Length: 109
Image 1 (cartoon, rainbow, N blue to C red):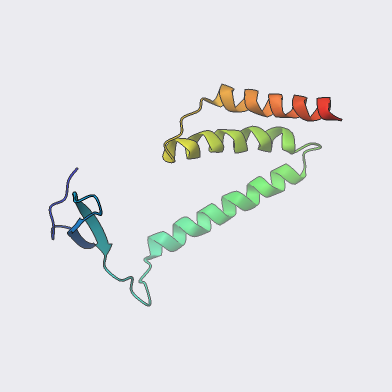
Image 2 (cartoon, rainbow, N blue to C red):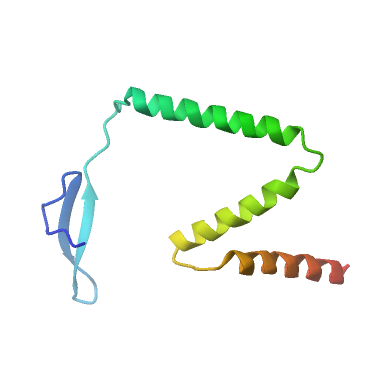
């Protein structure tokens, strides 16, 4: 979606000439307020998230080996984060790389 110069409600889109002579669009956001106004919905969502994390922490503390559950979650998060960065790797590729790293480390010992 292209935004024409001056059309953004949260900042300004300007055109700049790059060193290669090509005209590029640049977004200049409006300054953030010094005291943002946060609605009750945001406080409720933050409270619900904090309570969910506390419940998860409590449940993990009762497991004999919590890393068995946490490690796959971290790997799945790595897959979704890599997609945001433009690097695409399937979960099985991430898990295989993790296995190969562990195997290489044990061979070096």
